[in-house]
Image (cartoon, rainbow, N blue to C red):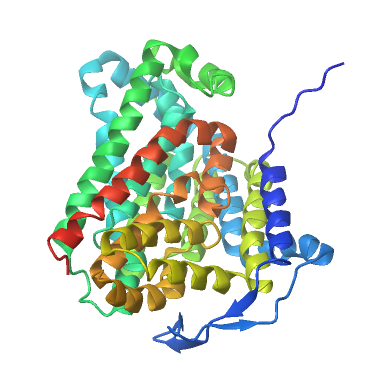
Length: 463
């Protein structure tokens, strides 16, 4: 019998972990000195020294994933709780009825449907550009997939609306304190200066992302067989595509659960903006949502706990992917090759024309982003080097911040080593290789756009 190879995301990421471990035997070790300033650990420019290499062997290959789990424990717990909480909410029937109601409305008012994708993606993009919405999109993926399917699209569209909408805003960040704010602070340029050009970037980023999703969504509505996830959506279509056939009604408990859910989302946004909530607080909010929704929805204690366990159980594969992705950074740091890589990139950039130097800075941040996915973490690691380096090559520090912003934002949604990306795809039930195939043309487009958008800052002296 002929056997066919089936792509497996876990195998692929673990193979990369092994490859990085092997690389530590050949790449010289090195390290920068660091200092703590305003609660952030920053690299001291010009302090790089080669150090004895620390090749990572068989033992490290097996312990790095364990360390990765420990270091990424907060986001793993976050995913488990979201999965469990939504399973409880879904058990009440409120989500299914909501999707059916919206599907029925759009089915009978088709003139409104053309506004659905651009309006919702713009809302998420605003969240990305203003307060760095990233991990926060995960709960919305579980809402928009059935909603998109009920409107005749597929789970790719349902995933893209919140995830790529926020990613467009994150890459075109205007006020994001976790990327632009930290990077400008380290680069010692006025906080949130250069806003006008970043607004132009945000408009281009958001409009491009919306156009890409809408073109694909239009093709899927005309010919569902063209969907890259048609086979995966068959059961979902059975559950949700009939939503336009009948005007179903809420029961009183379902109505109360829906109101509770909306209040939780409002609380989520308020907590992020007002109190700078992050993973721990958001996870706590959704844990409370799951329990309260179960009680208000009339579920028994056993039904609540069993639903929660089933929902969390479905996230097990996602947890392994996130842990393995983090293991890459563990191997690179333990092998002392991360700083060597950073030093090598800085050495190359120092000999280039200012425009080309800015573009290589963007590419360098994209490479580093393969290992370090935290925007604030990458800023703290790279900007102490890139900012003074930009002075040497004739690139404004504002442009150096922009190059960091592009490398951290536009490349992230396709990386299999990103915990957020793989977490989103895990929640959506979409294999990474299909997402990659769908995203690749868009990724190439944004790569070119990033290179082009780094040219005007040199021409009009962007400061």
